[in-house]
View 1 (cartoon, rainbow, N blue to C red):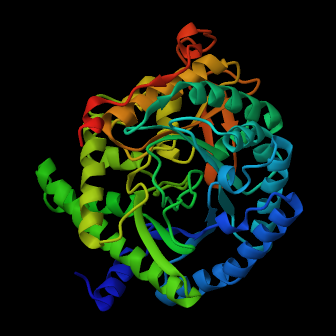
View 2 (view 1 turned 90 degrees about the vertical axis):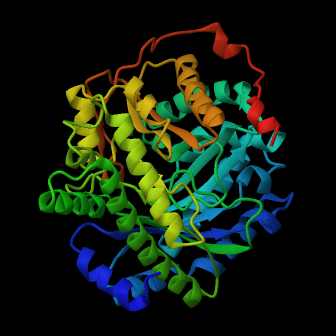
View 3 (view 1 turned 90 degrees about the horizontal axis):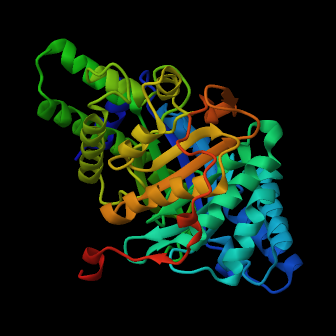
Length: 457
């Protein structure tokens, strides 16, 4: 294991290669805030968040300055609001979302996650109210993020919830049409959602978690790319097995750095440390791209034949390196392929190297799924549900987390550009097969049963 001194040396070596702590996320248990009185619930939420997070931003900045590495985003995740606000109607759920948004702004965090519901086996009244509230809640707030888990390997796929999410995404896009449907960029539909994700838009605090935890999300696609480039420059005939070892060693160092900073933030705030999530989460900045790693490995572009194998190697090596570095690895931990948030991947989609079908194939081996994918605005809710159902099936059958963050951009077609700004970037809209479909299969409803292997463990 690396000593603190060795970690500092690693920081010095890597500080110019886009290594950062992408997010420190404070998870807050909100269950004891519940009340049948809406005003009291809102007061409880405001007090709880402010009490626990009033020093979050300043502590993160201080610890980041100490080690010379920025904590780029400071965020909050809360217990699923579908549980906390279960008695309330959709319009009242929207008021809860606005309270979360206001208090997030007051404490200075960039996002607050947990406007969430877990409906993989069935939908309770509070779940339905929250889902019905999502379009308005996300369109009328800046910082609130939502997630809905509609499938799991243990339960199967709740197709009624899948169809409902197709409708919800369409409505969210429509209500934020003047901003290219940006409300959808704050909504993830999951299979096998973890309880401890620090990355948005999927972050929430699971029911089995402590009252408050600090989870750290570390990123470093630029660091991994540079490590591969240096190794191949020194020894051009390295095979993939040895390149995998280089990625593992790099992931190990990065994870140790992230855990060091996360633990110090937790200690300063006197809050329990949760997990370190090592995920190669890109940004739109040059040199901070997962897509560029594919080119370092010798592929023309992400999306060409060989891409799925390359991503499998990358994801496996990152997970192994992270697991060896820490006994507290959690969240998603692997490689993200968010189209609009990665300049290189966005360019691959614009050039035609990367189609929706190839993206779906890549999600069988990546850590998330169809992430920040802009599609034509006239895509029907049935087709949206079909895309979600396919992605959920990949997660359920392969016993892994998968998700969809789809953005049907109102008034725009395949080949047009959508602009989301900041970390969310911009994307060329990808064409969808049968985009205007109205297939009866998606409306049959019911539960797609769990695979047999999940029933025999």
